[in-house]
Every structure is written in structure tokens, then in C-alpha cells.
Image (cartoon, rainbow, N blue to C red; front, side, top):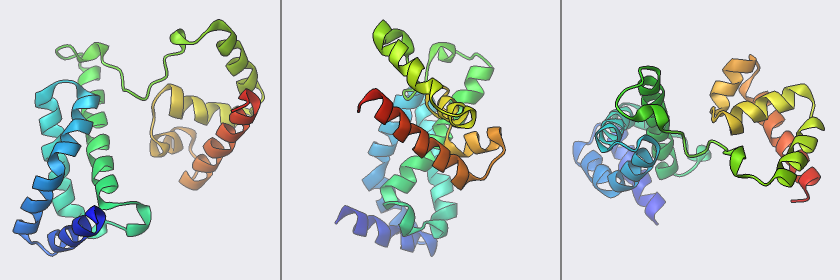
Length: 176
């Protein structure tokens, strides 16, 4: 039911309805802020990311496609990408305490048991070089699929397929 309500509001927002936008903001801003603050840690940066994301939502509401997930999922991805952009920007400039912040999806291999590390290394060696590269970029470096695609200079669909097949092989190898 929530998705249907958000979809109705988003259609109105695409038509320029400010009241629908205000209602969509009221219903979703807390969830979007939670995503943003989890990535950025600093509340003022998280607020900026959410504000900029809502500006993008206002301007791009007509671009939403139902085949790509729910309205809320679409909105969360906009906030997430904006927060990651801000995080990268501030990390490059090493501003106020952000130099030690890591993205929550980064994998911390130091916490793994030695036997688990050896098994993972063994399984990673079973992958071809291209699969190893895209999985490393996506899961160990925290890049998005689009960023991996740009880095390896291949089509997005091919990159996603390489990652998916590589993960399937790793799961089989690890016995998951």
C-alpha cells in the first residue's frame, strides 16, 4: 500500500504539484535521512545530502520507472549516491573528522579468521582476472556498478553479469 501511495504522489510531483511533493517529503524524509546519516555520520552533511536528493527527486520525478523498484527504493538510491559523492568529496579534502569514516559496505577482512581468509583467497583464485577485478572493486572498494563499469570500461550489463557469476562461483566454492 505504501508503494502505491508513494507512486501516486510521485506522479503528481512529476506534474509539478508542490503539495504532493511536501507530502512525499513528510512521509519519506526520516527514512532517507537515516540512510544518509549512516553513510556520512555528520548530521549537517546528512541533512545537506537529503536536501540535495529531494531537489533531484523534484526535477527527476518523471524519470522514475516502476521496473527498477519501488518509489522509496528509487529515492533511497538517489540519497545514497548523493551521500557517497559528498563522502568522497570531503575525504579528498580530509575535512573535519571524515578522513577516518569508511563506507558501511566496505569489507573489513582484518576481522575474518585466518582459515576463512585462506578459503576466500583460494576461492578468489578460482575466478578469472576480470571477475576478480570487478568483485574487488564492487565489494572490497565499495564502488557502485556504474563506477565499476567506468573503471573497467565495459557495458553496465556485462559488469553486472560478471559480478553475479563471480559471486555465484564464490558461494559454491565457499559452500554457501
